[in-house]
Image 1 (cartoon, rainbow over the protein chains, first blue to last red):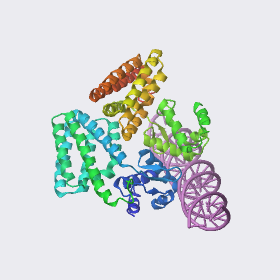
Image 2 (image 1 turned 135 degrees about the vertical axis):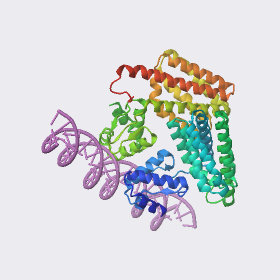
Image 3 (image 1 turned 90 degrees about the horizontal axis):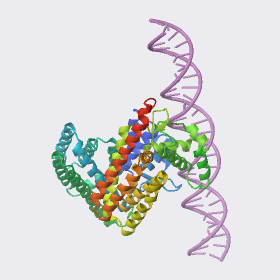
Image 4 (image 1 turned 120 degrees about the horizontal axis):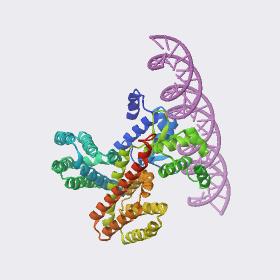
Length: 238
Length: 238
DNA sequence: TATGGCGCGAATGCATACAGAAGGTCCATG
DNA sequence: CATGGACCTTCTGTATGCATTCGCGCCATA
C-alpha cells in the first residue's frame, strides 16, 4: 500500500523509465526489509501494483537478479534473495574488508574540505546517539561511509563499496537496535576519525575493520536472540 | 560471424534461457574485446543475429547495464561501456586492492589441498612463459587468481573479486602482450607464492598489490604506445 | 551564407498475445 | 487407505504490435 502511494507521488517525475522506477522501488523495499527474504515476486501482481504491464516488471526483476537482491528458481518465478546465515556473515566480512580498504586510501587522499565534511558529519551524530534515534543514525551512518568512499578518489571503488553496503542495508538497520550498539558504533567511529586525523591509514583501516565486524557480531547476537525462541517456521529463512 | 557459429553450436544445450544465452554471448564478446567500447548495440540487429525476438535481447542488455559492461544513452540505445583511461585505472587499482585483500585471507585460511593445487598451477605456468603462449597464460592466470578467491573460504568475496576481474579481462589480455610482461608476471607470482608458503599473508598481500599495479602500468604503456601514433579518431575511445 | 524551425524516419519503451512448462488436484487402482 | 497418473490451472518465457521520442536532414528566412 505504501508502495502504491509512493509510486503515485513519484509519477510526477516522469523523466525516468518505468522499469527503472519499478526497480528502484523494489530495491528500496528489499533493502528496508519491507519485502522479506523468500517472498515470491509474481510478475502480474507487481504489474498490477505499479499500474504497468509485465514487460517493465520483468526487466526490473532481471536487473535485480544481477544485483543479487533476488534469485530465480527455474521457471517458478523469482523470490527475494534467501540468504543463509553463513552467506550473511560472508557479506559482512567482505564489507568489513572493503570498508577497511577504502578508509586506508581515503586517509591518504582526502582533501581538507573532505576531512572537514567528515568531521562535521561525525559531530552531528552525537545528538542522534543521545536521542537513540535509530533511523537518523542509520541515515548518518550511510552518509558517513559514503563520504569515505568518495574520499578514496576512486569512483569505481566507491561504487563497488556502495553496492556491497546496499546489499547489507536490510541487516544493518536491525543490528543497530541491538542493546546500546548505537553508542558503541559512534565510539568506534570516533576512534576511526582519530586515526584519520593523524593521517594513519593503516590504523584507520584496522579500526574500520573491527568496527564492521563488531556490527556483524551485534547482528548475530540480535538474530540468535530473536530466532532461537521461535525455532519453527523460519530457521534458514532470512 | 564467429558469434553466429558459436550460438549455433551452443544451441544444443537448450536448457538455458534464451536471454541468458544472449547475455553470456555478449559478455564474452565484450570481455574478449570482439565488441569494442563505444559500439552501438541495436536490439533488432542483435535479435536477428541470435535468431530471437527483441524481448530476450532487451533483457540481456538490461542485465549487462547492471553489470556495467554496457551503458544506456537515453533512448539512443545502448553502447558497449565507453571507459575513460581514468576509470580503467580506477578499476585496476580496485582490482589490485581486492586481490591483495583476498590473498591475505587466503594465506591464513587455505587448506593444504588448496595450497597444493595452487602450487601445481603455478608450476604449470613455467612452460607457457617459455613458449610465450599468451592465451594459455591468460587462462592459467585466471585459474590462479580464482584459486586464491576460493581459498578465502568466503564465497561472497570470491564472487565480488571475480566480478571486478571479469570487467577488466578485456584489458588484461592486451596487457600481457606488452614486452616480456609474461615473464615478469610469473616472477611476481613466484614471489607471492613464496609469501603464501611462509604463511605471511601481509607480505603476500603487498606483493599481490604490486603485481596488479605492475600489470596496470604495463597496460598503460601499451595503450600509450598504440594510441599516441593515431591521435585522431579515438582519443578517449579505447 | 548561416541559423532556426519543421517534418520524416528509425529505434526504443511499453502493452498485449501466445506457447510451454511446472505444480496442484482429483480420480482411479492396487 | 495410499499411491500413481492424467488433466487443468497458472505463471513464466517469448513474440509481435503500437506509441513516443530522438536524431537528422531540408527548407525558409535574416
